Structures are given as C-alpha cells and as structure tokens.
Length: 258
Length: 249
Image 1 (tube, each protein chain N blue to C red):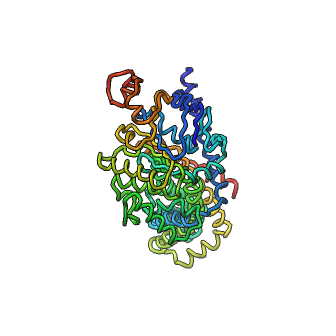
Image 2: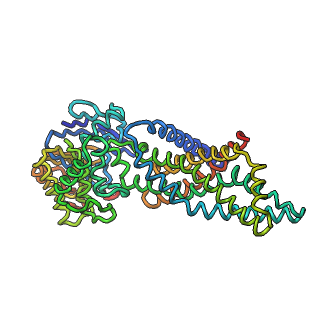
C-alpha cells in the first residue's frame, strides 16, 4: 500500500518538477530574446528548417485531410438528404481552419522539428558542445533555444495558413468530382460559414503550439544525459510531451476563444 | 595566478571534489593526473565557472570567481580557452565558423581579419585548407587540433586542456604534446591540463599534481613525481594493477 502511494507521489512530484523546469526555460528564452548580439542569421537558418523543409509533409497531410474530410462528410450527408453535399464548402473550411489545420500542423511539426531540436541539443549536450558554448561566453539558451523558439512561433502560423489553403483545395477537388458540387457553390459555402475571425483564432492557437514545441524540445535537449540512449529517450519524450500539451492547450484555447 | 581553496563538490551523495587546494602560477603548465572519473574534468569546469562549488573558492588574479554572476563570468571566460576531450566542435558549423565563433561574436574584427586570424590559428596547430570542412569530415587528431585552434582564437591568457591526448594514436598524441609545449613557448600562456597519459604529463608539465579521492595528494616537478615515495602516486605513475588504489570504485 505504502509503495503505491510512493509511486503516485513520485510521479506527481516528477510531473510538477518537469512542468516547473519547462516554465523556467520559457521565461529564460524570453529574457535572452532581447539581449545582444542578435542571432538573426541563426534564426533565418532555423526558419528554413522549420518552414521550408516542412512544406512537402504539410502539403501531403493537408491535402489528404481535406480530401478525406470532404469524402466522409459528403457521403454521410448524401446518405440522409440528397443534395446536402452543397454544404461541404462550409463544413470543410470550418473544420480545417478552426481545428484540423492548426492541430495537425502542430503535431506534425512536433514530430518533425520538436524531435530534431531535442536530438540535436541532446547530442550537443552529451558531446560537451553545450559546455563549449559556455566557455566561449555564449549562453546556450540565447544561441540555441531563442532561434528555435522564434522560428517555431513564426513558421507554424505560416505553415497553418498554407495547410488551410491546401486542405480546402483538396476538399474542393473531392466535392466537385465525387459529389458534383460546383466550385462556385463550394466557395459560397466558405463565404457564408467561415469568418475572418475563425482564421485568426486558428492561427492564434498555433503561436502557442509553436512555443510548446520549441520549449519542450529545447528542455529535453538540455536535460539529456547518458549518451546515445539518453538522446533517444529525450527525442521520444519531447514528441510525446509536446503532442500531449498541444492537445490540452488546443482544448483550453478553443474554449476561451469561441 | 589561480588559487583553488578548499574546493568541495558533490553530485548527489558522491563527493567528487573534497577540500581541494591547488595553486597555479602564471605562465606555467600544470598537469593534473588521476584515475578516470576521479573528478579532474569537474575541477576544470569549476575553474572556468561552468560548475559552481558547494564550498570553497577559486581566486583568479586575486578575485573569487565563485562569487561572480553570469555576466562577470562571461567576461572572465573570454580570457580562457578550453580544449575538450572530444574536441566538442559544433557539428553544424564548418571548421572556419568553429574557430571564428568567439571572434565573430565578441570582436569588431572585419570578415577578412577574422578569416586571417582563423588561418593563422589553424597554421599554429599545423592545419591548412580545412576551413570549409565540417567536423564530421575530420579525423580524431584533426578535430583536437581544430579544437585547440578554436581555444586559441581569442588569444587567451589561460588554456585548459581536458585529456588532450586521449583517443589519439601515439604519434598524434605526441604531435599534440609538442603543440602544447610550442604554444607555451610562442604565446606564453598558462596551461592547466588533466590527463591520465603519463608520457604526455611528463612531457608537457612544469608541475604535476596528483588527484585522488577528491584531493590533491602530491605535487611537484615531473622529476620529483617520478621519484615519489607516496605509494598511491607510485602505483598510478607506474600503472600497476596492484597497490593501495582500489581497482573497483
């Protein structure tokens, strides 16, 4: 019995310690963001890694999501009321813009970039490169965490805008070819149901997702101990933790925003 | 002068450095010897302020650096160069960017001046035309030499060498030894090296200090160390498995 309580106690303690440490890192990143010298070169390099290099995977995911969404909803609608597929424009765009594109982009970037951040910083940690930064009077938070944080926070919304567009195009393609909805009707549906507000709120959420991905990835990297095995563990747990946090944050933000 | 007074550091329950005292005078090379994992590298990291001691002080030119905040430490670190055991070159940067790292961040030198300085430092460690290579393309010996060039870039007053010859073949190890001696002659730096390679220690040291159980148990010139009566030091420098030093632990 005592053992059970001990285990529960330890897990709770560990959870709050980690949460505390991640929050401290988050605050430190903000502190270092405004210190000189600026890391713009480094930031642009990271933005290319986060943004440009993720376009293909975001394209494929968004396109298939938009298409599947149209296919599923369209067939379900048509099954009950014939002709109701003309609502597809509104349904597809609303679901994508408000929910699916931000969360999917977040989870994909958590897998692609969050893991890479944890692995790279973790490897630097176990090979003393982080110590080397200190010896050269450079804060690892400023040099490594700040550029990664900014690039995630800036590029995730950009990727989400792109994901919205591609997803809607996928939906349009299916609506036109499978359900015979005209492009005009589809776009009218978007116009009628989707507001600019929805787009901005969806993008607003991704700012938080970007911050979560970068902060957790960096935290796990800086905390890495124990060689290759440690790097592997950090990588996995960074993806798991940031994906979970994205889903939790998504619910909280959605509840506040709408 | 660097003066380490009553330095103590524990990790968890394990006391790695226990009331350690050591003086390092200007322009001399001191080699700290001791078994792997005895806390030699931890000691180096205290001297450059990466680790904070639990107790004790480190005076550099009369000032206690353990009381320094991060800003003051960073100013201090610009006077240091450190060569890491595995060189610790930044994988994502080229050799040139590695050597130029501190120069481009903390000096007002132009791009051409930085390029020239990188070339000069690489030449000092016997390398040329490697500027555009990535660390992954270098051999172990080359990595160490680039690491040394990087440590020298800011013209440091003190250089810390963490196992400078470990992992190198005997010939390359001797090349690094000669480099360390050369550097001292040419640019007159204070050197602190930690190693368990006795050949290297005898060759590069003005003084040798033996670390055991978190303390300095003996110090002296290489000749004095070779003639030591201390059974622990004797066992270590002759590399015997039998003796007062426990093999396990």
